[in-house]
Structure formats: C-alpha cells, structure tokens
Image (cartoon, rainbow, N blue to C red; front, side):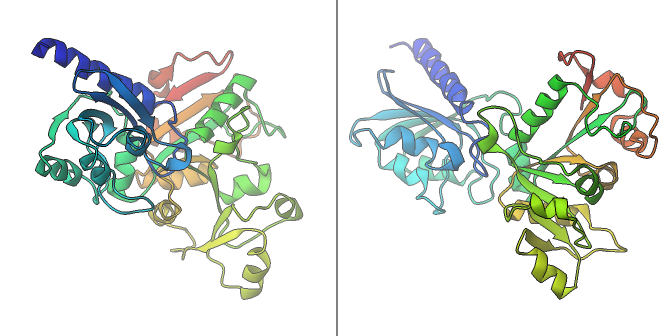
Length: 355
C-alpha cells in the first residue's frame, strides 16, 4: 500500500474517531468525551469505542477489550489516553498490552497527571505516535478547567428590549424557542449557579426540561449566605442541591442540612469571592458552569473576569419595571455595542447575542 493511500486511511479513521466523540458529548460528567477507532495494519476496522455515559469506561477500553490482544493494531483516538490509576486502570497500560503498533491522537490532555506523560510512555513502548489536527476548540473548555482547577464559566441572561431583567410580574418574558435554548445550555453544562435574589423571587427549578435530556440536568448551586428560606423553597428542596453560605448559626445549619447540601464559604465584607465559589464547584467534579443569574451575581463574576462565554437573549418586550438593569454587565462584558455579537439563530421575535 502506498504511503499516500495509507495517509488517506489514517486521516479518515481519525475523523471517524472525532465523530464518535460527539455522540456522548455533555454526557460524560467530569471526564471528556472521547472517540476511538481500532484497525488492523491493513486498514480494516476491527472495533470502535466511545467514552461511556457518566465517564466510564473510557473509549480506549470500550474499543480494545473485545479484541484479541495478539493481533497487531493501529489506534485512532481524539485525546491523549490516561496513564494513571483513578477509578479505573490506565488506558496506556491497556494499549501497550494490546499489540498496538501505531497510535494517532488529536489533542494533549491538560490534566497535570496526564499531559504529555502518556505519549512519552507509549513511545518508550516502541509505539509509533502521530498527532493529528483536531477540530478547533473541541477540548478547549475541558483543558481550561483542568489547568485552572475551576469550571469553564458560561453566563446566560434574558433581558427586555430596554435591557431590564424583569417584566411586570411575569417570570418569563422570552418566547418558547428561547426557553428551549436556555434548557439546552443547562444540558451542555455540568453545573448551574444562581444568586439569592433569583432563588428567592423566581424559585427556578434549574433542570433541563427537554424531552430525553432531563437525566443530564446540571448539578445545582445556590448562593444563600444567611440561609434564608421560605416554605416554597423547602417544598422543592433536594440534598443534591448545594447551598453556599456563611452562616454560623448552628441551629439554622442543623435545620437546613436536612433539606440541602450545605457548603460554608467565608465572606469578605459580606461578599463571597467568585473565585472561591468556582474552586468549590470544581471539587464537586464539575468542569463547566452555567451562571443564570441574577444580575448582581453576574456582575461579581464579570468584574473578576471569570466569565469565559456569554449569551444574552433579548425579548421584543419593553419593561416598565426598572429595578434590575443589565446595562453594567452588558457594557463590561460586551462593550458599547452588544449587537456586533448577534447570532443568526432563529428565535422568532427574540434575539441571541453570543460572545
């Protein structure tokens, strides 16, 4: 087989691995979604693998475990394999024991336990290693998170035509397409955070309510520094919901820890530091975070430059309730003209701004 033909096959199999990685995207929790293809040396596909839902087993395990160890093979994988004992054995050891002659990979894993070390290990095992060009930003968010030890942060805010976050007494003032888009963002993130005012006034459910995706709803975090709750909150409580607080009232803590998971973060001048919140959320194995509100919470994160990506949904309605203006946040994050970031996505009479 000519070298040119072999390069064509190698590129084809790697692109197939990339498509496989997209199957369980957003379903693998703290682990990245990976795809792999295993072939023999004559470019016949022997098996494929993807990272399982919830993150384990890994793609390499799923692709190799069914195959004869003695058959010489090539492996195409989108991300550098793991090389340490976690909840499962290292994939590099499995690869080395499966007569892999060549490995083609797409990106280095920025996890300090892995980064570059796996590739060096495989080279020492006399396995030929080739790096391919992966689609831009495929593992960008994941690598940012494991490098910084904080989640990659996305903000989402809905505003009226005159830039306010409230409309009369209506909880919703955007259309059904915009609501579905907001729920899709929840599905795409490991965690969601709202401030106390949003929790107190709107009582948001914060789950993904798109049919078939509810099981992939984000983990919920609420800022409630003084542990102030009303009956409506307790009626909708869950031990899976994490409350960030700075309360030292033991009776309150004992009472409410029956309803929620409580996590104390000391405040500075009555304010929780955004970076400390992110570090705690990362400890819950959340690599991506969606902040939905309110405007005070968004401002605090934006002032510390801790928002990586932002979405604004603009309704056609004009609010006469001018108590929650988004202008400060919009001007700091998007600049003087937010409409230069307008997305051509069909939300009917609503507009979507993305940065």
